[in-house]
Amino acid sequence: MTDQTSTTDPPTGSPAGRRTRRQLLAGGTGALAAVLTAEALARPAPASAGTDGDVVLGADNTATAATTITNTTSDADALEGNATGFGSGVLGGSQSGTGVLGRSADGIGVFGQSGTGRGVLGSSNTGAGVVADTHGVNASAVFGQNYSGGTAVFGTTNSGAGVAAVAGTNSGSGTGVSGQTGGATAAGVLGTNTGAGSGVLGSSSSGAGVVGTTGNALASGVHGENPGGGDGVTGTTGGATAAAVHGTNTGSGTGVLGECAAGTGVSGVSGAGTGFGVVGTNTGGGEGVTGTTNGAAAAVHGTNTGSGVGVQGDTSGATAAGVLGTHHGAGIGAGVSGVSDAGTGVVGTSGGGSGFGVLGTNTGSGVGVRGECAAGLGVLAIGAVALEVHGPAVFTRSGVLTVAAGKSSATQTGVALTTSSLVLATMQQDKTGLYVRSAVPNVTGSSFTINLSKAVTASITVAWFVVN
Image (tube, rainbow, N blue to C red; front, side, top):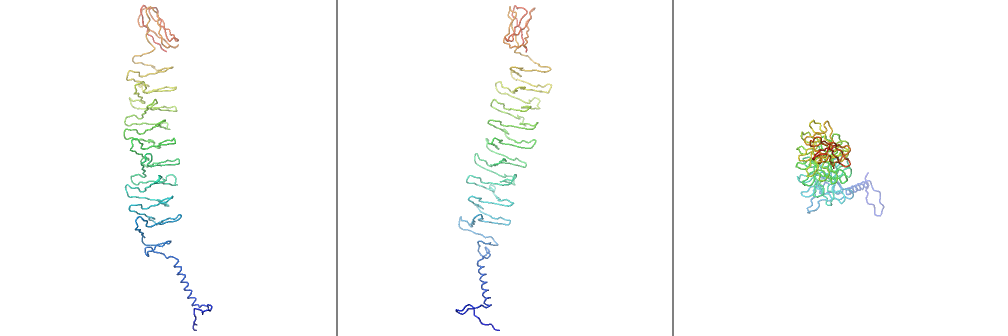
């Protein structure tokens, strides 16, 4: 059986005839090739950057070496990437190395700029968001600068206590965080807490928590100020022998100085029954506590609102005083003055057999001890021996009255008397048959009259002494 000859083109003007199977197969193969060719043209083939010299946009580019773009035009960018919306202009990723690395010989390695957002943002799930390091001895690993007057470096965190918004760590012996300023009223480091916590907190495992240093003789190393009426500086410690606030002066100045324009310069408070509100200790032999004032008030004032002592002084020195008061003025000021509204102004107590409860010594020619009272007793002496006097005793309510010749009596005026007053009189000459017959007080006249047994032929003196 032979194959019949057929044509592929129909006669002119005749309708197309049926196509043979061979014709169908030939046509189908051509159509398939055409489809495959169209798809190949429509889909970009994977590119090998650096091999064929092409970098295909909108597709993954794979290379076995780094791709370098060099712009030989001075001060022009080598590569610029722009993205709309929230996309990244340039995105770099790495499995374990650096995602984006910027290098510069003299300029900025990586520069980020934004109109209103963040110029550079670093984020990490568990590590540091941004890490900066430098090998320069005088350079900063992180340097922030604000040309508009705002904050140069700002840190924020939503974690709780114990986490810092900005933390500085120095693994050597240098400073963790350092702040500098040239402003006369500005702070090198400023900490602000809008809540009730601390503005600045310093903590150390074994050293000082906060150290303040200044080279100005009129400035303070540490200055605390509270415009709200609270404490300017507060110190807290749980140590039994430690001080909450400790001031040390290695020279000859003051360790701790408290000043107040209207109130108390330094106030010490203790809640312990055996503790002290203020303790002053001098290991060099000087005063433990010294108070100075230029007014009429007390240089040192102690107040006890309970039933205890306002000021107490203790010493174990054999010749030293528990409390010593010295007056260096030229007037009649007191070295020690005791005042009480209803009780005793000054109380002295001694348990020694040869000691004195109160001892008054005047190294000049004045009075050693003086007692005054306008209405009561100036001095009250009570004891097995109420009063012992060594040396002459002088009494202002005593004297000598002269009875003139031819008289048997004389009157002493100007002596205040009461109904309890006793007038004692003794003749100072020995006259036979002559004696003091009576001493009659006149309370209303503040006088008394001494009567002799008879008139005298010559004047005679009579000593008198008024008691009570």
